[in-house]
Length: 240
Length: 222
Image (cartoon, rainbow over all chains, first blue to last red; front, side, top):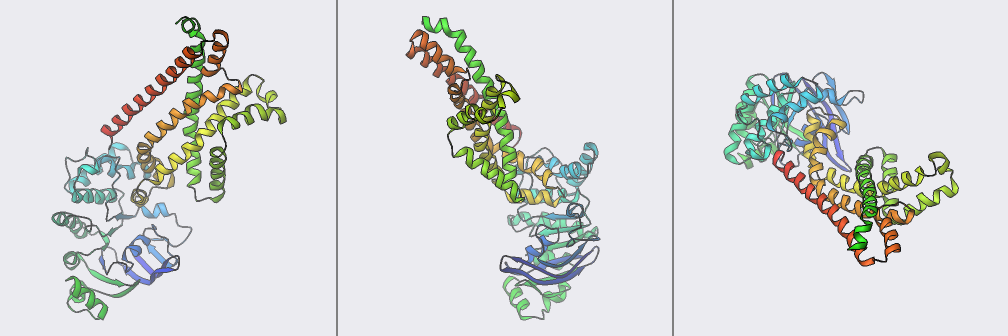
């Protein structure tokens, strides 16, 4: 589903990604961990073209993102993204937040878009909030709307960029629960997170990144209990 | 009281023209400002240069000089009076010059409004596959517009007052008519007082309407 070959990304003279190569299977849930500044968010943002790769190749959902001939907007219809700060459209209601993509981008009729949006909002546990505005909702509720908004486009892959880092502790669980449900349903997911419990329980594979490189990757159980590299050991010792 | 009552129809005739020029200039300045603001934010360098040059030129020279230059100066070197008609050209040129001048300020208001929208809003729009136009039209501009209302109302008030500078280039708006009436009646104090009051009523109603509009947007859409 995702194939990354020797991905480099620099901002000016500052090289953030120094050659990332990895592969994500369909229905696989990959969790990316690492210290802040290790490039994990930049890596994720390269996967839907929010950042342009400096060099390397990215194939995702059957399209080559790094090919200049690829239509980035078509590609993004297949790659959903959830942000740390939710980024709900502040001037739109919850229902409109979920329907605006299908309606304006995919030209779905309003009645059909509304129907799908209500189903998705029910799925993330937000029935009754359709007419509210984002700032009337808690962080956890907003993040669940953001997930519904992405799902409304019918993506093949979902990218999560620290989806629970901006939440109060008591709201983390409700968002992780929605993500877990998605994983069980077979969504291909790449999740950047500090939630090691989620990584262990839901992740099929964990990637540890440091200083712009993949240091170590493997099944959660083995990576957490028996890390091979010193840097992985050092990082896990600090956070577990 | 007498000079006012006698000459009120003449002054109201001038007021009508003041309102007409104001309405046209306020509409055009927003249209021009939006286009120039989008050009200034464009990734295409020549578009940015053109818009920047436009803003700097109109902001760095006095409106009165611009009016003299375009309304009275241009016919000296170009047969614009033949192209547009002797009577039409000054009217057209005055309205467009005023709109371009005010549009330069509006450009900066709209540009600041667009830049003030959180970058995450744009990224979220991109992530649901919106293209540049859709992102601007459905996500960024609606949010930018709300915060642009107060400075735009300010600029509209300025525009109404700036129409008084059309008098020296021969547009028979309120100040122009006032000068005529004063030349006949010598009622300088009363007439200028009345003219000031008329401008006040005009602009005060505008700002009342604007705050009503702002309140409504606040209630309906956060």
